[in-house]
Image 1: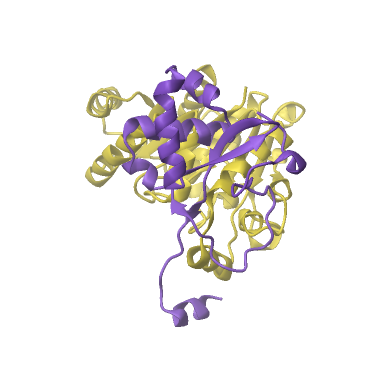
Image 2: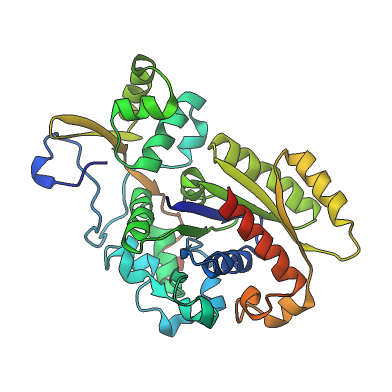
Length: 254
Length: 117
């Protein structure tokens, strides 16, 4: 049974795309077939973690939404990022959004049929035989986000230990509850080493009445990689990667 | 879920959404998904079942929501009237699917859009 996992944050800059790529890769390393759709059409970015730039994207999600190609034509097999020992089983497919200014502007100017996106998700799952479809959303609330949340089996809401994030997360959790997401988790990113992680976890769980799947430490090493690779795969024993692995385990277990 | 089969699509004016549309020449027309948030809980639950399964019968929806058909039916009718759901008939069986939900176009001065082309 395939699962749709959406990764969302109410505010931008929480590390949402980075966490999406890392958790998706960790699940693929378990031998699962994973797809990642960049529905952050207004400000796409997750492609960078897989070494993609504008020149490598022949067909994007935008092309599908405008009827220029089938959704499977927008899926790029990026499984070579996985470690050699896992290549035979796990698969990672990336469905990027366009980086071209004119194409981003066209989506904003003309809109599109949201149901087409929904159909595209289902087609991807079937045609690529996916175990997991990850949806990297645009921060805040828009149509892509609402659709992603509404059809998700699991939703990760990312927040930083920051007052603005705390307030925005309350809104995101409220929407997720309204849309009856079966499994909702919070992930705290960029927690300073000085914090008491267990106390922070308890406080956040109590505030939102939602389980915290992991608290990711603020890491210069992650910053230094600067989204040029999937950190979990390059440094699997790093404390950041340990938490990523734990989050992936929880998603698979539920 | 039934296979798509245009030849057996019997009802009008409702039509099945294309899996690969012709390239849009004009902005799509329909309602925003944000209306989902304003619906009463019972109606929202119905739309969500349809969203997740794409094409479902009244009996499927009732089973998913674990409610009697008689309780679901008025809500479904209301959602069809509102345009959030559409009915299609396939092999004499009535199915419900999403209506025309769109990402609404943004309003900006034409000269700004021209600069961004």
